[in-house]
Amino acid sequence: MANSNIERLMAAAGEIILGKEHELRIALSCLLARGHLLIEDVPGTGKTTLSHTLAQLLGLQYQRIQFTSDLLPADIVGVSVFERESVAFRFLPGPVFTQLILADEINRGTPKTQSALLEAMEEHQVTVDGHTLPLPEPFFVIATQNPSYQIGTFPLPESQLDRFLMRIRLGYPDRAAERELLQGGDRREMLIGVEPVISPMDLLDLQDEARAVIVAEHLVDYVQALLAATRQGAEFVAGLSPRAGMGLLAAARAWALIEGRDHALPEDVQRIFPYVAGHRLHRASDGRMPDTNDLARLLQGIALP
Image (cartoon, rainbow, N blue to C red):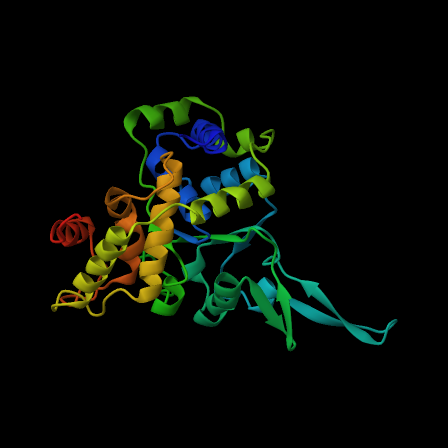
């Protein structure tokens, strides 16, 4: 049975992000699985609008961090300032202390600055001056990335890529959606008056529902077979890790919930597999990430349970 909160959220998002229902479902499944999302595409395809739309419709605190080559880790996490009046240091929290972060053009920041998000994304906390500070819940990072061929980019290392549960590309809209965009108003102006569709507490409840979606033993066997297929042979430099497998199951649970089911199917795993595995694998032949054909062949080689 379909969840009314999910239906209302998808309908409201679809009025702003035109012609991208599938990509919206992927982004929402990533959020429900308590993961983080990486969007790679050329400028002007709606990456920033997507993140702002989700924040508005979910009623989440929102911060945008524009990554540049001179951005420092303290610009993300925060800094301690000495106050003469109290003769003590006071911590000024950075933009990471929010519920939804847009890390815009993350690969334009230096590796040292990129790594400032690692602990926050994995542990939902940051350590400053020896003190561990929790981050708000829910906590969700959407990072945008320019294609690697563009000037002034620093490729994300594998350790950073692995922190993102999914990677998607929005791509150009189809002809009908593009025409509506050209004739309609500015999408960001439309967001000004948008009211939340659900509350952050509702989102936490949905995340709990996604975690409770049933995964049968045969589905775990299927995921293990997929993991093993990436590790065998000489097609990839290295296979998927157990953490990637856990992320794959979490994303499949979330996708099943969006589809209105209380149990996950092999088809759910197949649907989200390219978005979970694509940025974690590199072809042995040229070191590049696999394309859709590579991942389709991999899925076709594993029998459905």
